[in-house]
Length: 227
Figure 1 (tube, rainbow, N blue to C red):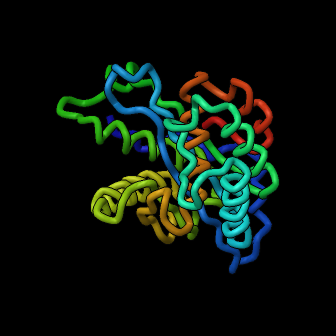
Figure 2: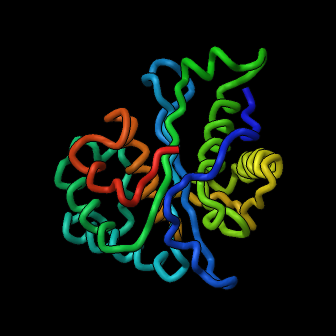
C-alpha cells in the first residue's frame, strides 16, 4: 500500500545541521537490510545516514583507517552481511565512525502488517518504495530539503532511483515539505560510498537485533532515531 505520509511528521530529533547556512550541503546515504519476502524474518529495515559536506571525506578516511588496522584490502567494503560473524570488524568499524560527526534515521517496516494493508497487485518493489518514503518522511526538514541523497544501487538502476525520487517528492509535497535537490545511485564501493557502508552496517545490525539493541547500537542512541 502506498503511504502518502499525509499524517506523518518529521522526527523531533534535535538536528545538528539545522543551523547551517544556505550554502551548507548535507549528504545522506540510504540502504536497507532484508527483502520483502517472509523468509528473511519479520522486518525490512531502512537506514539513512547524514553528514555535512566537510565530513564526507572524513568518513571515508575513518573507514580507510579501519581497513588498514584490520589488514583488509583498500577496496574492502564494510557490509553487515559479510561482517556480522567477525566481532573485531564490528568493533573497529563503530570505533572509527565514532570519530566523525554524523547522524542517522532508521525505519523498521513490519512486512506482515504491510502485506495485510497492501492493495491488490502490489509487489515487493512497492514494499521497498513505501519503506523508503516512510523513512524520508520521518527525517528532519534540514537534512532533506534541497539536499543530496545517495541510494545503494548501481548506475544501471537509475530509472529505479528516479521512481523512488518521485514517490518521495509526491509524499513530501502532500505535507507541504520540500524534497531532495538531487537523488542518485551510489554503490557502496564507489567514490563517496563510505556513507552507504555506514547505512548498510546499521540497517543490518538493527534487523539482526530487532531494534537499537545488541553490543554496539545502544551506544549510538544520541546519533540514531527510529522513525
